[in-house]
View 1 (cartoon, one colour):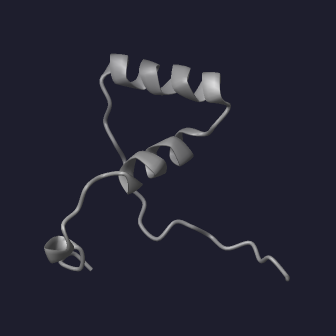
View 2 (tube, rainbow, N blue to C red; view 1 turned 45 degrees about the horizontal axis):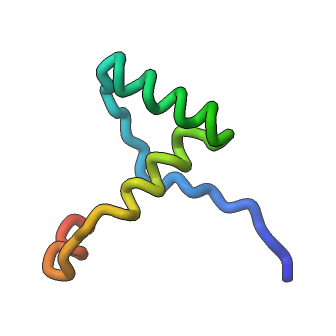
View 3 (cartoon, rainbow, N blue to C red; view 1 turned 135 degrees about the vertical axis):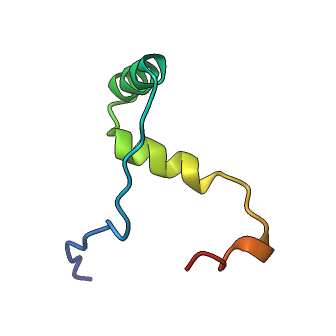
Length: 58
């Protein structure tokens, strides 16, 4: 099986964080050794979304 390097960025966003939020994210990333992008994407995947709204914003 050949793995290709695909770009994940379908949509790029900028998030404004309060100093405490940015600090908390940085500390978590340091503790886990994971990049902020991965942490944020995982959190987004866990958001509850009803089936009715799933395809609304495509």
